[in-house]
Length: 341
Image 1 (cartoon, rainbow, N blue to C red):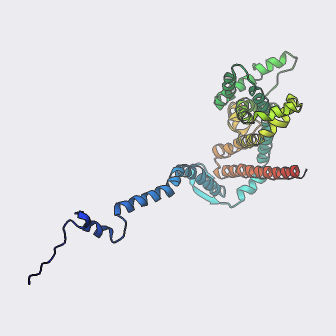
Image 2 (tube, one colour):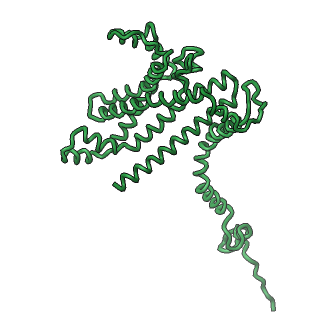
Image 3 (cartoon, rainbow, N blue to C red):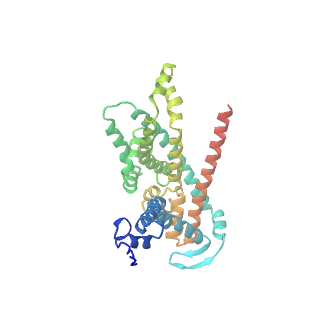
């Protein structure tokens, strides 16, 4: 009796010619290699894409901010001269103790504080009033907003040079105007308080419009219903401003105070150009308007002591940290008292 043997179909199951080969590649019950690769890429895209998008910021921050901060802290612990940066003499905290005992540091710190107060307080008050006026419906409001921002777009050098000529002792326009009222010529550069007032006027002129636009943006975000409710209750314009507008932009006011504090601590270009020469670096003949920024520049690029310059830089950084800590403490205390009351 003849038996017949059946030969399996070469086309594989269901007539697919590549069926056996695909099964050998994928394995029994396993995913296809191309599908598995796409799944892996999809998972990698979901998890790694956000980090890839923010990576450039951290790379730039590490290269231009974090590394210089660490390197400056290392230099502040050594005696380093500008001409030989590769030669370092370990001093530990010697630069900090010398800076603590240096009268020039305390003089620069005092000048930085006084110029900061003289320039910041009027600047923010004027910006608040200007923003309140721009918040009304005025004809050509866009023009006034652009005009308010124009001083901020002006370079520090150009603004300082113009104000230096305005405050010139013999031919300045300020002394000419004061002379109309019988006031003698004021030596703005060589007197302490007139020099600080002149430098503060440059800062006020440059930053008032910028802060005013910040306040204006915050004011426009306040719901109009609050003003309508206050008007129905009989509140005047001044009461609406103090009871509705100011509390509504409190966070923006704190933000501008923080920015102004940082700017006052780093004040450099205005007093440097106002000095008109070598006196600009030292803040006048008697250091009457030398700020911490000018002291840092003098130690590093005039006295060639990079270690002491790095110490001044870290003193400025620690001062800002201390101010911010005090600000947070005061803010928490005021919030607690307001809740209890």
